[in-house]
Image (tube, rainbow, N blue to C red; front, top):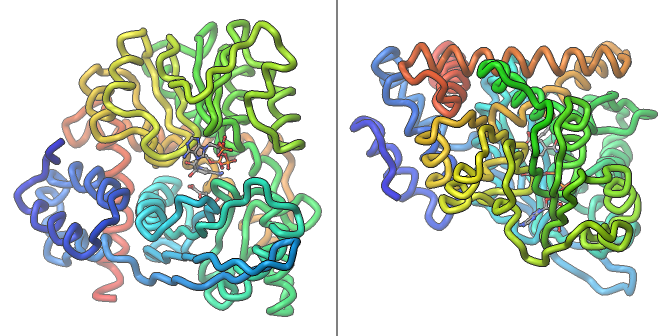
Length: 449
Ligand SMILES: NC(=O)C1=CN([C@@H]2O[C@H](COP(=O)(O)OP(=O)(O)OC[C@H]3O[C@@H](n4cnc5c(N)ncnc54)[C@H](OP(=O)(O)O)[C@@H]3O)[C@@H](O)[C@H]2O)C=CC1
Ligand SMILES: O=C(O)CCC(=O)C(=O)O
């Protein structure tokens, strides 16, 4: 599909393609933002004078390193580690670490690029970065995970600091991995520096609600989009892809708001349970036993497991992709719309292809892009940093209220910005423009750095 750029922006995009060959996910993330920015340059010619778009597309720093580790049999393995410190205009680099065999520089750069604008939308003092490794945690023992994390942090620690760069989790990195990473950071630096990582355990500097935050936040965002349409989750049939951290807490909050989630998935296939998913069972299988979603059907004979099935073919009113990038293509989007879907909220990062995004926008459904809808995770990480800075810990109720207010204000900002720029209801434009303008203003203020 041909991208639609303003004539001043087309050459910038061509330059990004030429300078970053083969990084298709990064190209896609840049395309999506740049398509929104034409009217911004008309309103703010100073951004063009300062070549803000060109500068924002170039990471401030990219770190690639070797991660050697030993498995339980004593065999040696070599993985590759990454940290892309993309933009520190609004605060220290902030963004998760992904451990997955598909990871390469193009994935980390797309995630880091998205993170710049997402973090700006939160209104909190955090810049954008992302990292990870092509290490596959699946099927590894706890001791293998520990040795890998220790080796990864042995290199990464020199680039981190509470005022410099603050990682957290993403796919394949949860509380267990953050524990091993924090332990190694503490050991190497001889500093108990809580603010250097977020997603920590509650006994050692973590924040209540950080575990739930991305899923809860995405659900709050969809709730706001529904309110604009004088609607709610009450009685809605919903699909949530994935069955990891984001998916689980999306399901929990949808249930609380009166919706019914009938299907979720993992990379093996999806489970369909017409009367509504048994969330306690999913948590037991995924969070505790680290099993596959197909095992759900062993416990519920009226549920159906479809190996390699396409979850988006199930009729629903609300869809919340919460697994990975490009999981909804143009055809899936058209199927969702045809089957009566009225709202899509992206818990995952860039889960919809550009063709899919176009289908949703043309259909006029409520479509909340990831950089706005899933910002609750990183926003609550920033709340964790605030608690660490004042050596405090807040209650669940207070922290969740703060999260909800942040999601409401992100929704409002995207909604109003879309209107201001002549595309009412287009949250893609609203999020891209509002996030970009915040970062661009700071970059102009700093001069040429
Ligand atoms: N954790 C957070 O706070 C935030 C996460 N996100 C985004 O949310 C998404 C999910 O992250 P999170 O829940 O933390 O990760 P988890 O590792 O906890 O869960 C990921 C889930 O997605 C599935 N999945 C991953 N890759 C693929 C794939 N290639 N094809 C099909 N299914 C896949 C996994 O299945 P399997 O186990 O079979 O691989 C698993 O069910 C990601 O896009 C992440 O970037 C966004 C904001 C914050
Ligand atoms: O909490 C964080 O710092 C990172 C969250 C994240 O990786 C994301 O928003 O995609």
